[in-house]
Length: 218
Image (cartoon, rainbow, N blue to C red; front, side, top):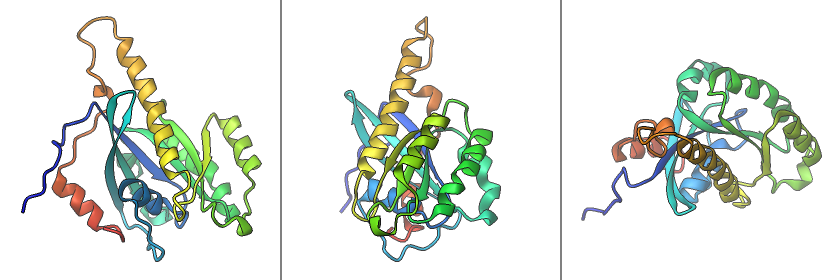
């Protein structure tokens, strides 16, 4: 029996959002929790690149988010420029129980600013908030860093599904407001259609399925 799918172009905007940060901070589980509401306790390191999509509603518009996840290990750094190309948002993730992952945020931010569009929307995400008893990165320190760097900030737990939905909703809404203002600002009728300036090639269902299979929860 064939399953019915909404047309792949049945959306108003398509935004590419990348997940970056050290290996083991929970990027893949944030991705699977938001797009499939799944969590893998025995999560393995992502090899190469995985992506998944999900559509949400913002101001009556359908926003299709294409969220990319890559390995945080140094040996996979060569993919950076292609990985960042076309991205309009980034979630920079660290583990609240591992100080070193927060210390490395500055390096990830530099890489992001070197490779990505200068107008990219960046959110710092302190993941694993369920491990309160093991916390080594204080919320105030992260907030201070964000104020200094002009980033938004949220703490999440992919395990408990705390603030995961909110994190993605916030960043996608912020991107939408920036893009929609840009579109409305076009002086004549020949300006880009909504989202055109940020669209990337629409992935086929087969490619989406293949990408999902590469993850532990696929």
